[in-house]
Length: 516
Image (cartoon, rainbow, N blue to C red; front, side, top):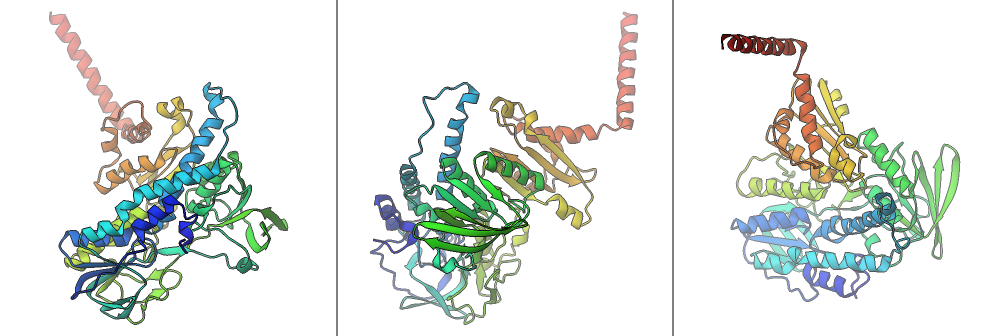
């Protein structure tokens, strides 16, 4: 049996996962000499740092105390998207009649089998993050707890490792609900929810951010009675209000009861039955449920790492202090990923690690502020964003123009009965340079990449408009944005000049015709 909650139930698939990302029989290597780079943490930022540095010829040590692959593989992107894909498929079956398909009956959800599939897919992907793969690439992989002893030494188990440079990529963990009764109540987080083998009939999800919305919708689609509690006035409070509203409507159509402007004030448990006390403008009431899922944010993993001994400044709530080159207050040590960034995304951690490799090993001057980081929330529909929001531009006194296309005006979306949502961009007034974009669509996470590529490479709306897009595709919405911009260039003066030109061409044609 494994003691790790992420590896429950301890079936063949979780055993296969463990054999890759935390082998029971793993023997730590004997350190020899000084390492060019020591990496503490085997999540995305750590793995990219270690593999990238080793591939360039550096002598690298990688330290991980739990599971290689970090949150993304084990308790984040991989298992959550596996579950979301099933929930989305179940919902498509439930609306089959609207597409002219008569099913023999209501789809029966076999939750235990869904979770078996999830564990299998996770195990199938795990060799990519395995200890054996990194070891074969020349990385010294240490399984154990890493702790700084000084400015240039790290201890792992009984071994002491010396380094020229180090990177802390210890990630983050779910924040706890710290209210009355929480210490005596079983509360799920993203670290434990994927170990469920039975579908909770009644679930309360605390938190209306991306994780809360994704899992609330997935469990509702699979048949749970879900109540979602959010302190703010709306779910996805970071996104634009109308984007948030579309997701909220979708969640409620799928059966999620949303309580906004509501605080959780108490938890209790009697056997398997749990109670959540909530308070809103109407007073206090109690929700009975079988499972409570906490999605109230994340806190950086900075405790017990000997950061003070290494002269590294940090904050327990915001993480490790870094400069624009991701260098800590110890000039030999860098930090990347969730432990040092407000952008807690796998792809952000990946590119932060690339900044670290260049700056730590090759005297680079790469700046993390130069990274253009898009993100997506994988609800149905998805919400994706890159760059500035309109309120951010307004705060910076940037005068902007806004262009928007509704998917109800996009043929492919109409044909697939997926017309909810929009794509919106903001540009400086009178220009076509894209400052930011928001997309709400079943395919928003994919569509945002075209906008991101355009922004990164200085391609404006005119460039998108002049690029041929296959018809019919959802990406046609992006081309339509460019067409909108081009139409604004047709001012009365330009239209008048063009009219005069065409009139002259007609007169010239008549004269030629008369001569003949």
